[in-house]
Length: 108
Image (cartoon, rainbow, N blue to C red; front, side, top):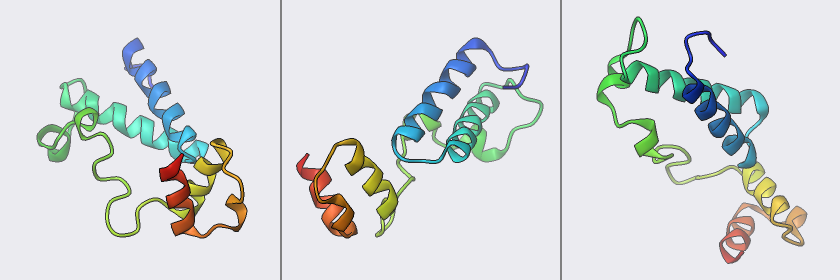
């Protein structure tokens, strides 16, 4: 973690990373998502040398809460659904297709 990060930034990074990993995201991707989120929040607060327009003018990631992730007609991948079904011990998950996994997860 960069030297400029505060203790709060580090806690937020760990929280976001753990949440992404729990949802089935790989470790490297989870770290990337967490670091980008923390850095965007730092830019929004004016604690960086430079900041993009979206960092300062867009909806804060803390308020957005995944509103843009998994959007569109396809939603989560089959692998993400399978990993969640695995964590919830849904029987027969290995033989289910994507739609069946979605329905099974909705019931649990």
